[in-house]
Image 1 (cartoon, rainbow, N blue to C red):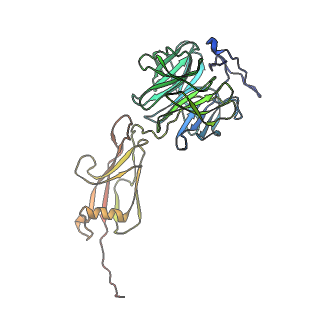
Image 2: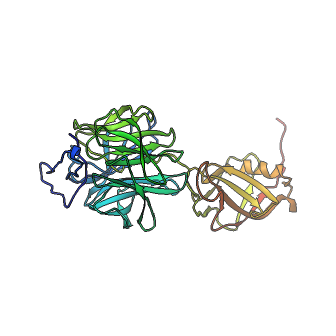
Image 3: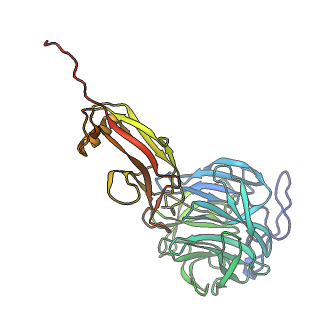
Length: 421
């Protein structure tokens, strides 16, 4: 016997337990479950460098109220609380790969939800707007970002039919794509690197499906090897294009599973605390982001740098980060159009060098160190950002507050009296 996790009306909390009325999913009726909570998770087998987030925790040792947590893939049961108790619950979540912003679908009631932004440091939420256009009586079950079209998709069900939507990230409004014909109980969705929408249906049997982007119709890929109940989360790890499920099982256990996209076989990666339901599960990873406006930081405009042959004195040039995965070029001379006198590439938002290294660059470009007029380079500098592979938006972007004037001068070599030894 399986249950759908639809929450209808309000939630009653007690000191010992959360009351719930569960209906047999075989009858395709919605069930009433208690409040979920907010959860954050790092996800990649053998690599704990990729952050992921979730939204549903209750009935476990952590507590029965909505909270925000962080953990790692290989140890999903070890949780770090990012914030205090929350009054509302998330039934879907996704990272916008173009901006790195984590969005959540905040449950209000059947047929009503809000789109929110979630601070991944504090768990705090900022309202975007009501998810207008949600099918009557439906509950949001998932969000997922399609980086091939820069589109946020949403999913809902009322226990008998499901609907696929696109979601406006400025207003929260939903636009229906169509009914998920062939999948009455779609519990979440996840989109791979190629833009294919996958979903999990928790009917009998539990199935992995794909959803048509034009019609919403579902096509069964394979039956899952898990017996699922209530809330579920799913997300792709972009670095490996592998599907992971934040699964709650009919047996009352839960954990992170890696799902085979051909056979539907699911392999346990790690367990959650007992009886923990997790939702709004995402894996942002190190995805390249769309370039954003950025500013030069140091040195200040009009700075004068005197280089010294062989000197190890450090010189640091800094600017804001434009986007994850971006690379940069520091350009001196005429930063807008050629000719450019000096160009230094960087994979980070700074360049750290030495007075000696800069002196060698100036020398290689014909500047003298004899005290004549040819010992100084007077000009401007600026920084260009270049987007990472696969990122949407502009290919390159120049700083918002450049260029800046700078003088580079080679220190004159002075011969001092010396003695033979």
